[in-house]
Image (cartoon, rainbow, N blue to C red; front, side, top):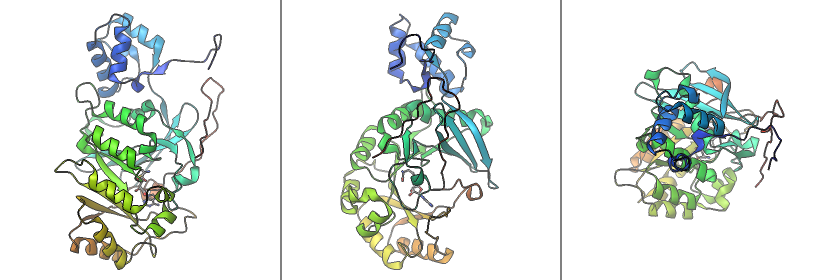
Length: 367
Ligand code: SAH
C-alpha cells in the first residue's frame, strides 16, 4: 500500500467500474442512478477522454469525478499498417507493459482482436506470445480501453462491429476481468452495445471457466483444439495434460450452447504434425455429436518456431476430408501477415517503465 504523503495518483480508471459500482458511487453522494447511464454513454459510446466534455453532467459532478477517477489506461506506442488494411497496434500500459491489438477491416464488418493478458503463461509450442511468458493479467479497464483507444483513431463509419478475444493471452485465465469487460462491451443501454453474437472468446479449453462463460454470457466460444491425439496435443499445448482431449470434448457436449449456435474448433495446421488424412478422419470422428464448426488455421510462421505451414493443396485436402464427413469447415485466411499481426505472431518484449511515478511496478507472475 502507498501511504499518505506519497504523490502517487490513486485515482482509478472509471471505465473499469461496472454499472452497479458506478451507481453505488453516485448513490453514496446522494446522486441519482441515471447519471451512471449518462457518464457511461460518454465513456463507451462517445469515447470521451475528459470529464469536462460530459456536457449533460452537472459541473460539480464532473469535478468530483475528476478527483476520484481518470479515463484511459493505454496509449498507442506504435502502429503498423498491412497491405490488406489490417492495423497492428502496440499499446502501452501504465506500468510499461505492452500488448498488441489488431484492427481488421472487412467489407461488411470491422473486427478488433483484443488481448487479455500481457504475454501468456500457457506455453503453446507454436505460438509467439508464449515466448514472452506471462507478465500479468490485464484489468477490466485495460481490456475495454483497447477498443476505445482504437475506435478514437478510426473513422466513425468504420466503427468496430465485431470482437475476437484472440490477441495475447488466455481470456479464461483472466476470467473476472474478461467477464467484466464484456459487461461494458455488450450493454446495449449505456455500454458499447456490441451484440454478444458478434463476439468470440477463444480459449485453450479451461473447462470450469468455459462452463461459466457459457452460463453467464451469450458470446461465441472458440476452442483451440489443434489435435485430438493426446500425445500430439500435449506436446503442442501443455494445458492438455490438465484437460486431455476426452475430458475437453465431453465438457463441450454438455455445454449449454444455444440452439442455433455452434462451438468453433480452431485447428492449426502444422506440416507433418497434424495435417494428414488420418488426422482429419480422427478429428471428424471425435467431433461427432457436437454441434460445431471447424476453423482451419494455416500455421503462420515466426522466427525460430521450428514448425511449417502445409502446402495449399494439403490444406484444401484436409478441409475437404472434414466436409466430406459432414463437418462445417472454414479455412481462415491470414490477415496482416506482412506486419506479423496474424494469429500466433503477436510478440513483444515488455519495456521497462520510463518513469518512477507511482505505477512503475511490473508484476511478473509465474505458474
Ligand atoms: N489463448 C487463447 C486465445 C489466443 S487465440 C487460445 O489459444 O485460443 C490465438 C489463436 O491463434 C489460437 O487458436 C492459437 O492456437 C492460434 N495460433 C497460435 N500461434 C499460431 C501460429 N503461429 N499460426 C497460426 N495460428 C496460431
